[in-house]
Amino acid sequence: MNEKISLQHWVSSICRWPLGMVLTASISVMLPAMADKKDGVMPTFADSLLLEPAQPATQAGVAESEAVRAVLAQKSAGENVAADQPLDVFYAQLGNALVWQSERRVNALVEALSELTGDGLTVEDYAIDKLLSDYKASRAADAAGKADFDIDATHQLLKALTHLQNGKTDPRRLMPDWDGPEGRPLPMADIIQRLLADDVAGAFERVRPGQAHYQALRQALAEYRAMDQASVAFFPPRDEALRQGDRHPDVMTLRQRLTYWGATGLLTGQVEAYPALGLESNDPEFFDSELEGAVKRFQRRHLLKDDGVVGRNTREALNASIASRIDQLRVNLERARWLAPVFEQQPPRLWVDLAGYSLIYVRPSGERWQSRVVVGSAERETPVIHSRITHLTINPSWTLPPTIMREDILPQVRRDPDYLERRNMQVIDYSGKPLDASEIDWASPGNIMIRQPAGRANPLGGVVIRFPNSDMIYLHDTPSRSLFGRERRALSSGCVRVEGVDELAKKLLEDSGSRQGLQTLKRSSRSDIQVNLPEQIPVALHYLTAWPDVDGEVTFRADIYQRDSRILTALDQER
Image (cartoon, rainbow, N blue to C red; front, side):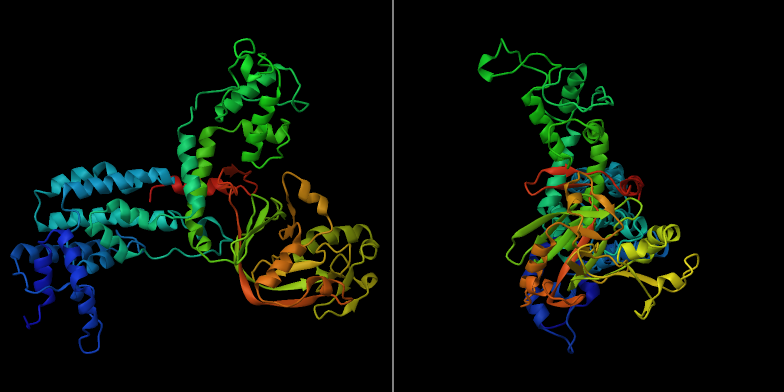
């Protein structure tokens, strides 16, 4: 058949077909249609679905198509559709065919939406309590009524898929320092293909983050929701820590709190009844080795020093509620959705887990190098950053950042005129010219800077790893190595101190293709040696208060910057 089929003719036909037939037909003709350009213009998606012989136009089909156009125009004019949920794109790719015209498919949508609770999302956002009843009511409606329901159902679908792929909340509104990836457009063609194949659940799986850490967080959320949240006595404050060998009534409370968190076998077992088990005691107030092992496992899960001793930090973690951990998991599932594009990057890549006090570098081979870090204090938070490592500075001098100079150093100098000299610090102007500190009016010093030359006392140590960012943040060495042994390491003025930074620097040089030798450069008498990386390496600094460890077990961290509550509040608001 040689005559051209009009778009209206095609629409009126396709609107009456089962959508599964549309998929089959589209596959059979897509390639030849796409290969046949008209007047040098690539055919549209609708053009590519044209079939021969043409189906006769029907008045009902045309009415449905026109109804879809009219309802879409009305909803867009009323601003009822968010910009990130492009209904017009969705229906344009279907030639304005209706999608939700079978109860089976609507039921599948309701089921898929209800399962989003497992992602920490709020299913009430998607009107699942009325989708099925609205569908049934639309059966008796005219073409406009059917189109109205269909578009409303698609709106809920696209809203849910957008939340699942990119996150429900906007990190830029919640975190002023956010410079991470923007939300990505939905893969509309893939979504439509799955819907046409009656695989509604597959459309959700297509956009759900597939990384192992996301699956681990979902699994942990399911496990914590399944825990018994019956009331259990809090572990009381104590003047002295509780440890193995102690006998005290608080030991029984400790057993109860650990059982509340999922530990087993701590409240049962009698020595006389089970001699083969080697139980040490049937005294629930005695702190035995089995209980110590349970404490250590709990401490590891909360990034605490796993010494089996119950001190203040362990007590605080024990006294948290299961509900608070569920909230924490929901918040970090949202962060994982924000970060999905970051973790899709191929190695090499480096990221700093701020709340976890750790740095992970994934080398081109996939090898992981991990180290402890010191991050900014609660008063001087380390920001979230996405950038690329451009160069290293070897034997760096330290020019004090304005905040440190203003808040830390100037008060010291005003009290002690010899402060700078004792610490080998120099006053310079903005051009780098040395100034005489004794001639500075320290009550109003003007446009000066303070610099500390390279050396053992320099806070930057021997290596700085630099990347462009608006906050003057970098990774660096430190002479204060003992700080890495602390349990909580939010101690810096914002920059990140890295344990074993020399080893990291060597790997960065090697993996970027540099032939520079780190130790040779460090032995040089020169300072501030800049070494550019031939290939820049992606770096991300992120704040995560629940995240899986290398073994896949989710660990919980203190919310040192008090950021979780803002995200949780936004998650719980209807959108």
